[in-house]
Image 1 (cartoon, rainbow, N blue to C red):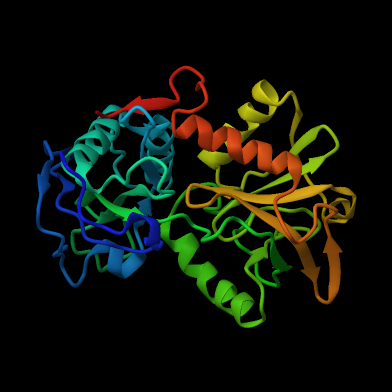
Image 2 (image 1 turned 120 degrees about the horizontal axis):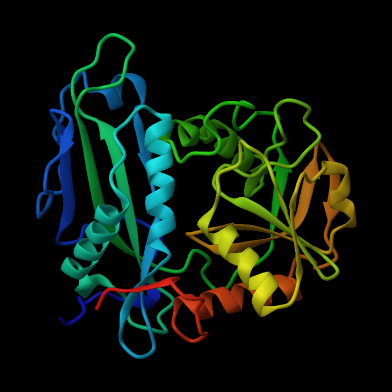
Length: 340
């Protein structure tokens, strides 16, 4: 299949309608067989559970074209499991893991012409999501649900390379101690919008959220996990209210097995940050966003790696993981799903 006539090198990080999307409906206690459709419109009741009580969850992953011409995706089994965990927490029916992976493969194959060429810096973003579709007026779970996947080609998250960003300590809490911070629920992102808009208005790229119970420990940002480097150590915060990032879990393996770093997943106290060498935010969209400075109500914590470029260790982590995703570095067994 020939690629679409798109200026891949100037592609932004936004939504472009592709040819096909996958849809499956849950009704009468079971999921139907699902199908691909050309219709990009969702039609639901005005009283649908998702509209009344925000009963929804989603995932995000990418498809890549490798140097040898294959189309692959990266660890979709982890996205499938995380979406199952999200669904269970929100009293939604879990979409089975193998069906999730098959649906991703089917949807990407149907939109293969939108997978950017190798070396363009662009990828095909894949968005699986699920929502309560039947009418609900009393506060309870919906009876019917829809699971969908759409794809859209996106350019690199950072045009011209990833420059270190400045973030601020937020006065808002991202998640309650026993809330929904560890799942990918749409409601988590809705509550973060005011905080991120405020941060942008103040000149910051993101928020650092502290633990809501004591406000002494680092949790994450509105959409990414933290990683820190201190000497030969790769350190990442541990908390029951942090989303288990697929990228962060993969970087832990890269750090230990490829770069020989000592990996620590533990509580990270805010007062420790001044002693770290490098800091980054990790997630599907950007892989790693280097952080050069954190501002806590006027007090600055500047990392030795500086504001000009990625720190040396984070650069190695970034290059190794993206090399694995693009087929240039040998991947651990089971990490790469070849689509075609």
